[in-house]
Amino acid sequence: MAALSPHVALENAFERSLSALWIAFQPIVTAEGGRVFGHEAFVRSEQGALMPAPLIEAAEQLDRLHDLGRATRSRIADALIAQSPFDHAVFVNLHPHDLLDDDLFNRSAPLSLYAPRIVLEVTERTSLAEVPDIQQRIATLRAMGFRLAIDDLGAGFAGLASFTALEPDIAKLDMSLVRHIDRSTSQRRFVNGLTKMCHELGMLVVAEGIETEPERDVLVDLGCDLLQGYRFARPSRDFSVPTW
Ligand code: G
Ligand code: MN
Image 1 (cartoon, rainbow, N blue to C red):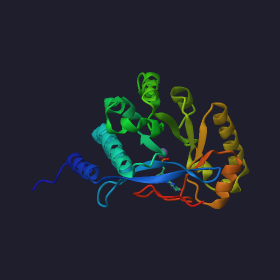
Image 2: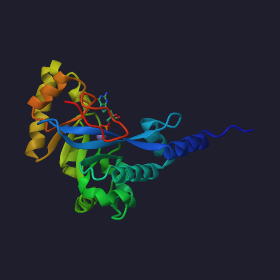
Image 3: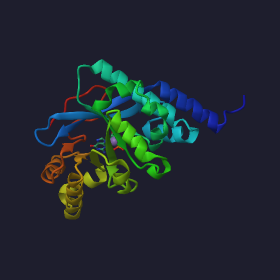
């Protein structure tokens, strides 16, 4: 029997992963009091199927990003139905290409019904400059009730240009700025400046990837509004309750 071409093998693996897709939720807590503000949704797939990073890369290679985005948003909506009457915010990661998918703008799409609770996280994994009419698209999403966040702020690819393109409601500091911040004066100064700038622009600031108590305490002192990371809870199948 002839071996499958690499393309067909990748397509098969992608299909298997898509059908085994599930969503993990990680709480985001308030810096004041450690109450649950919301949860971030992460795509997961069963063992043997493609895991998140290869899954996104496969979708990019196969030109199937819209299928992945639609499946993800529909699974998140399923979880919200199952968790009703839970009514906290849910943070949803978008690939910049999702901004080109009509389904995202469809008011009867499963997730659109929850728009006022949804924060769409955008990262410059590929440049937002490639999205035509970006400002118009963002305005439409806002009109539908969605809020917007810029993800991975301070990482290589999350440029400050996104601030003008997105005018986000929420900024998420990349975890590279968070890691060991208690041990680095320059890191503290940088985060201090970024946080002040975000506040001046009217945004809430989330520090993500917090793993230790000293990291948490420094970020609270620097004025971050919301906190997320293994210190509080790992992503899990249900909307888990964090520890402070
Ligand atoms: O790109 P984005 O910021 O959406 O992805 C965050 C990733 O980091 C997820 O895969 C999530 O599971 C992971 N994550 C969440 N909290 C922590 C943490 O405290 N430490 C580390 N190392 N990873 C985390
Ligand atoms: Mn994210």
